[in-house]
Structures are given as C-alpha cells and as structure tokens.
Length: 240
Length: 252
Image (cartoon, rainbow over the protein chains, first blue to last red):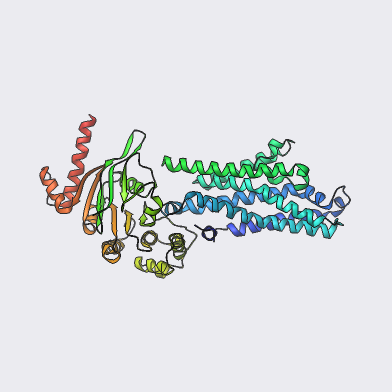
C-alpha cells in the first residue's frame, strides 16, 4: 500500500480544491484584515509577528481545522460511498496502513493552507510593518510549530471518519468539537489548551517557553489517537 | 485434492447461528456452486473465507493456508466479489483496477486484460459511478479476476444483470478453470444458474450444509429420502422444505 494510491483515491472528489481554496481564503484573512485598516495594527506593542498573529490566528486556525475536518470526511466518504473499503479489505493489506496513510495524506494537504497563511503573514509584515531582523526566522518557527499543533486534529479526524460509515456523523462530530474549541478558548488552562481541536489555535509566541510542553502533548496525543484508532478498528472487525 | 476445506465452521451473532458447523470440501480446478435461499448464510461463509468476518467456531484452510496466521497469503491468492460490486465511484473503471493492480503488484497489462475479459474495455475511461448496474457488476468481477488468482470466491455475481449479461458472465465463469487453471466458488439462490455453471454443489439452509457433492449425487440423495428426484429445481425446493419442516417440528 502506498501513499500515491491513497492520493489517487481522492481525485475528482473536491478534496484537493477544497483544501487549497480553504488555504487561499485563510491566507486572505490577514491580508484583508490588516490591509483594510493598517492604522489599527502598525502601532501596537509587540513584535510584528505577534501583532499579526494576535489579530488573525484564531480565525485562520479555525479555518485550518475546518479544512482538516472536511478533508477527513471526504477521504473516508469515497471508501464507504460505493463500498470500496469492502474491496480493500479483501486485498492483502492491513487496515492500519490505510488509516495511517490517510492520516499522513491529510497532514500533507494541511501543510498547503499553513504554507499559504505564513506567506501571507510575511507579506503583511513587509507591506504594512517595519519587521525586525528575526521576523522571517520567527515566522518559520511558528510555521513548524503550527504543523506540530495540527497533528492531533489530523489524527483524531482520520480516526473518527474511518469508523463512521455516514460522512455526516463524522462531519457533525468535527463541527461540535470546533464549537467546543471556541468555547474552551476562553479558559486559560494548559489542560484545556491541549484539547486536539484547541492546539492549532496556539501560536509559537503564545506558547513561549512552554512550547516543548505543547509539542510533547501534541506528539503524545497523536500516538494515543493512533493506538486508539487501531484498537477501535480491531474491535470493529471482530464484531462483524 | 481439496483446495478449500472447512471444518465445523460456525458463525454466531449472539443466539443466532448464521453458519452452523459446516464441513465444506472444494476440489481444485472445479466450480463449486454454493446454493441456498436468501439468508441461508452463503455470504457469511464467503466472508469468513476472506477474513471479513471472524468465525466463532471451527476453522478453514485455503490451499493449505490457515486463517488468521496466513491471512495475507490467502488474500493474495483469492480474487473475490462479495455482496455486489465495491469500487471508488469517483474513479474510472480503469483507475479502480489500477489501484487493485498496484496493491497486488501485478504487471500493467493486467488491467486491460481484466477489462477486456469482462467487456468493459470501451468504457474504461468513464467514471464508474456513471456505469449501469450491469457494468458495475462487471467491474466488480474484473476486480476479482485481475491477475488470474488461483481461487475465486464470487457471491451472486449475476445479480442485477440482464439475461444476455447473465449468459455472458455465466459463460465467463464457466470458462475460468480451463483458461486460468483456477478454482471457483460461486453462490446463488437459483439452482438453474448453479446447474449451468458448477461441477459440484453445496446446499445451505439456515446456516447448515444439507448436501455437498455432484449433481448426479444430488439426485441419489433426494431419491434416498423419498423426495422428487427428476427435476433439480424440485429437488432443491424439497430439500429446503424438508429441512424447514424438521426445523419447525424441532421448534415446536
């Protein structure tokens, strides 16, 4: 089983255009927000990157999470729609490899919006601010951190969508989790912030010196979710 | 030599026995007709042979390989078509088979060969969701026969086909053991269909294998029990009715 097969399976489903379009829209947020009223931002205290992220990242990260939810639902809908998954299960491959590769594909595609968004952030910095010498370096760190923070949500949505025959159920669970994320966003607690759907809202600057804790939490959650997905699939097959 | 053997193979869902301790013997290079009314347990048995559902009792071997330890090896050698066609609707027929080809590690030419065998080559570039039911059925069959696996497990492969399609697929299945030196297990609820395709027959009712053997043996089996033994359709119905009757008496 290869990554290219999983990538092929989602052609003509709207998976790629939806995520790319989502990325373009998310990348447009800082450009429109700051471009429309630069005077509200240029004189704020803090580094250029911190000002841009504080003003835009909550909206941008929510769009990223929505893209991940949508992507996961589409990826698994093609498996269940015409029972293709039944055929896959009669071939000499492991379900865990299909689930794992779909998770990797989702994360790979989630890179597209994050790249576009960081290019947009850098562009905002040079268009309307006088960026510090370490602006690009900090933006790069934030980019890597953002990818790390997206790992658990990619994992959890891959796992949920993989066991839900009906795409609307996984979509509904994802949307409820996003609402939960927005509600919990107001709590200043580490335990709440490491909820898989909340992690993408954290920026590198916000994490500050505690970034290794967030990074470790993200990696641990991803491992736990992967193990849980494996167990759920084993139980699912056993119960059939 | 038997290529598929089951011993006391059982599948229970709570108190309900979908398959009750069946002992099947499928000879290599033959077509085995798996016959039974709807809900008899044919698909469940076939699913167990493919590892899609776990037996609750007994065991089986396919070409000397045992499940679950040899699962991958079994699946590499078995082409299957279970409970209707299963495919990616967003992909063309050709792309669907290309995925299977890559997973099985077959040469590129295998896709075109399978499409030509089932008569779908001309429609290979069309999205499979736009195929008619018969074309989808053919695509499912192409997915089973691609690469000429030594064993084929086909669950009601002619469902949804028009009479000429049924004839065509029946002839195709009939020709497979000679063309590709394979063994075919094919299920149906129609004796007339099995009669035209199979060398041996297994009759299943309420999860129990009532008869297994040749068609001539089936006549003797019916005659021994005082059942009509001339018309195969009558034999099948009377065997099923007798079993249902005895089951009803037991229940009372």
